[in-house]
Each structure stands twice: as C-alpha cells, then as structure tokens.
Amino acid sequence: MSESISLTGRVAEGTGSARSPRYAWNSEAPAPQPAQAAWCTTCYHPGMAMTITVNERRSTIAAAPDTPLLYVLSNDLELKGPRFGCGLAQCGSCSVLVDGVETRSCVTPVGRVEGKKVTTLEGLAFYYAKLAKLETAPALHPLQQAVIDEQAAQCGYCYNGMIVKGAELLSKTPRPTDAQIRTAMNGHLCRCGTYPRMLAAIQRASATMAETRR
Image (cartoon, rainbow, N blue to C red; front, side):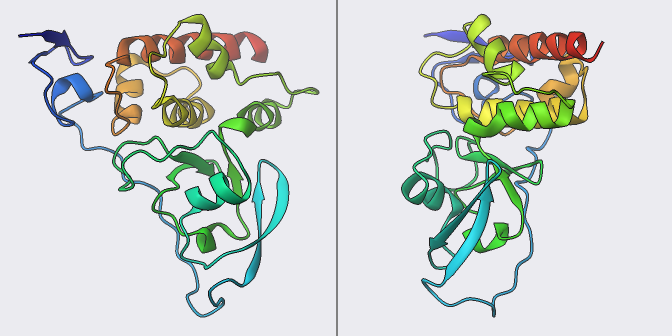
C-alpha cells in the first residue's frame, strides 16, 4: 500500500479521496467559497449580445446570460488557461480573477461579469505589471516563472487554478507565511500531490516580487 505526506504532515494511505490529507492543503480549515456576485435577471434574454472585459480587452459575445463563463472563455474567446475540471467549483481548475478576486468560472454565469474585469492565466503578467506599476509587463507573472523554476507541475491540469489563486494571494499578502499559503490555497486540488512544490513556488515568487519593489 502506498503512502504519501501532505502539507499538513499527515500520512495518507492508498489513493484516498479528494478530502483526504493527500489532496488537501489544510484538511482542518474549510475551503474558501468561490466568489459570487449578484446580477439582474431581468436585463437580458437568451442570446442577447453583451460586452465583457477579459485581460483588458473588450469583447462582444452573443450568449444566454446563464452560460457558464468558462464556456465563453474557452469557446468564444479561445482562451486555454481556465480548464473544465469538476464543473462544481470544487477543484479550482477553472479559476479566473474577477475584479481581482478568484472566481470559479465553471459555475459563474457570464451575465455576472458584465461591467467587471476578468483576468485569466493568459493575462496575469499584465495584471501584475499594472499592480506593481511597472513600465513594461514581463513575459510571465512571477508566480508563473517560479512554477517553472521549481518544476512544480506534473500533469499540470490543476495549475491554472493554483497560479490564479496564488497570484490573488500575493496581490493581497506580498510576503505570506507557509500557513497563510496553505489556508489560501485550500480548495485547490492536485491529484498528483505537488503541493510542496507549489508552496515553494509561491514563496519564490514572493521573494522575486519583493526584490522588484525595492
């Protein structure tokens, strides 16, 4: 029987489940709830054109307002960062930033983001440059580069959500502790168990960003 060590320091036997320590950043803390935003249900009818802002670009789409944002991002805008994982906002693979807040796009109706700013994995470098007031955006967000440097990914399927959530954390808590990282990242699942490397990547990115601020 195989064993693995989670970031909580516990030993999990076998393959476990999505709630076992192997697959959780912090099994004692409840997972953060996906961001929700109220929207008017009387303003649209199915297929009506609406304009959304994604990665600082305004795009006009024709979709029912209850269409999942993930479908619009993937099918209409052909963005490959957000991924369909569970479809229930439980794994984090589909995460994007909406006005800087991590949001699960698989359960967020596209009507909720009209008038808001959506940032996907593809736009994180520009998002960081704007927050850091850099004259030129880097090729990658510091966390994207740190994931490469730490060789954090295995299959890589979860890493859209991991990076998006990590970027949100670093924008609000520039020098997080390991405990703060575990708490913030709880609710993002990695079936390959790469949590320690992702933690190291976030800490590396934090140090890089601190150097930039000097």
